Length: 357
Image (cartoon, rainbow, N blue to C red; front, top):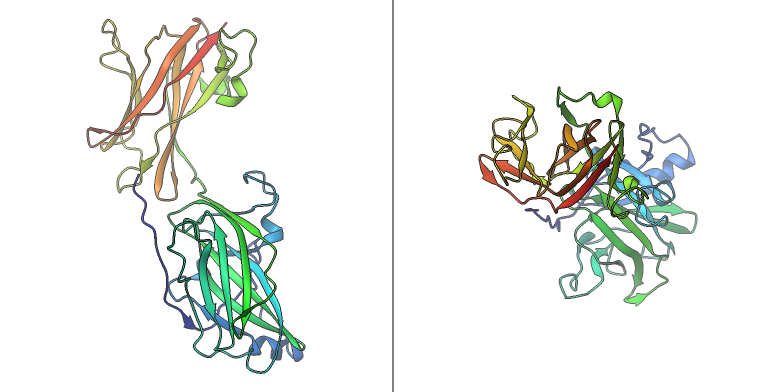
């Protein structure tokens, strides 16, 4: 699958609202008086290539503990939709520190070195800069903005990381280190950021020969471990009442693919041929279709429905197989192959499904 990685290096000075919370509430104008005066005095460095108004801004605490995160401490974000505010170092407002002079955000000079954790360098003025480190970094996030907020005789730095439109993954152990007159200060505590694509609402079409409402649908992992199965580690369906959701091919999203036009689920034309592995042919639209094959098939399963959905720059698919109410057995080496404009794409990895009565 082809992905395009974006490298952003241009920076300008400007203003951006950082008051929107992760819940997406509207930004509110600053109050009058001292607080408003301090807000005006805040300093900001922005990347003009990133439009933060299209993102929901979240704090680390709001996004930790997400049920879909790889680890509970990861700050979990929706790719291309959410950005993360990370508190940087709190510094004393010594003479010459709280001023923008030659300010900018750039890729760190060592960012392209093999295994280097450095990702960004932020220059505030000739005396003050910050180095940003992340391990296992693959452009999942970009440094969109840095804000310096007065707090009495000190000022708090806040770093805003936007998620990519085309990359997902985990940027591990984000650490921000201040440098004053070239001397490193105390770094921030590590924060890991996980960014994942959010699936769109699916387009679904069903096999009219199967009443899917009579079935409970399960993930494959939920169907393993059944003592009635020939192999307990493989999914087992109770015929007539259970259906399995099988992940289909992941495709690069192209115009004309995410649409239902003449969508249907049919027996494959070669399904009756002796020894032929073909069982079902799925038509989504004139450009996109799928072929479903088994190395051994005896009507123990039926293809009850298909869902397609967008996932960032990709098109995902899900196939729902129902256990037959009248036949049982083991359907081996289930493989789903996509066809775009008649050209076969990468098939799925073979799986085996068993259905019993």
